[in-house]
Image (cartoon, rainbow, N blue to C red; front, side):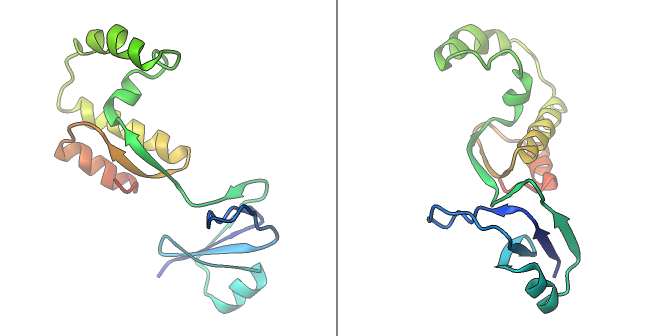
Length: 146
């Protein structure tokens, strides 16, 4: 069982109460939050495998992206951020449909999307597109729940 201690961060427990916890540490056991207590208590009671100093950072559970597009998110990066949904559909999606993506392109774009989502705190996604075995493998390999 892997145990990671995160110390010196501001903990946002996301437990339905509007609060933050300071001057405490958080213990993760096998990818699950196991305890929040003083650093001294957690170190004394547990054999810690890894310690992360989160000074100046917020510690909170990962975000859930309930509507992800693994391929198109990366493909349209930089050309659709200022468009409304209607503009995207009528002005961009039809021209973009002219691109012929190979079976190798989809996992490549999916990998980039997974990296971006992980970088910004997403730990669980629901993909809204036809997902090939290769794309599913990329998501599984990234560590994101999907």
